[in-house]
Picture 1: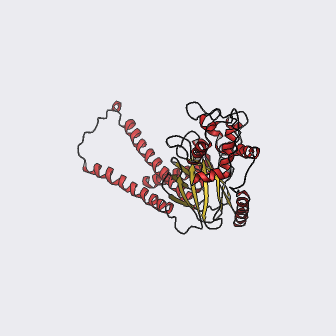
Picture 2: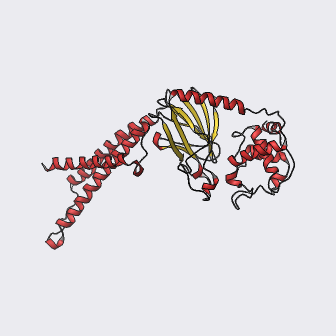
Picture 3: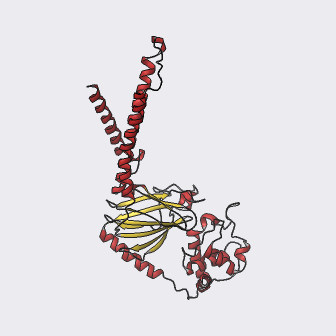
Length: 375
């Protein structure tokens, strides 16, 4: 009778704990939006339930023993040595518990690693501090873009009220169709990053020189937000991930729109630009990719990021600066932008830095000059 009551009490405790967590995900994990995320959540709740039961049982026995067998009641400590029964119990019982925990954990892990037969494949490249996306397979193949933080600088600097999605909003979100298996290939261009979207049950490191894979299949439409989960430098906290899951027809419309946008933005590297046009476009590129380190006034951050205003590099031979921006500088936080930006964007931002603040070189760097330095 007592055994049945104890079993029912443990079951009620676990049910209550699970119910409270489901009612308030803000105190727990995000609400699952995929089968994998649901498996991870269920596994988490199972492990937490087992831990709670063990905790309650152990401390209940301990407190009962301390209270009921205290010395003031005349009890004396029992002396025993090498009790075979006790040793068997504290070996066999934990072994059984570990097996019960290992079985669902192994099942969930195997599911997480099954990246076969995807409907869509997206390559994710981590940069300091943004994400690059290349749609490699499925509808949308050929689409490429860079996704960066969209939170305004005045919010970050505390001169304006924080928005609803502060530090969790981007200019170009990843868009995928609902109910389709999406394979994610991750790599890094500079340091280790980690692509993490909790609601989709996906978290994979992006290591330079390596390609790792994972997958997800969203069960419902919506916008799901995550972040880089690997400390990757100064702006690690400014590297969000946003995935928009849409119906199939809306996804097809997005693919069509993106391809038209890419075609419209495909610059002719042989076009000759005026100095003013390059500076205007370079200002936008600088604000999107350079301002976090070198600051809007070009003064940089002392001891961390060099100033561009008055820089010998910026005011020196243009070929040196083009090579630096294209290839980065090993051993520093200066990233290689050759794979992130087009020839025109690079020419524009270099022209902008050489003709802004106190820099007055008067030179207009043409896209063809950048293109020639790639070879």
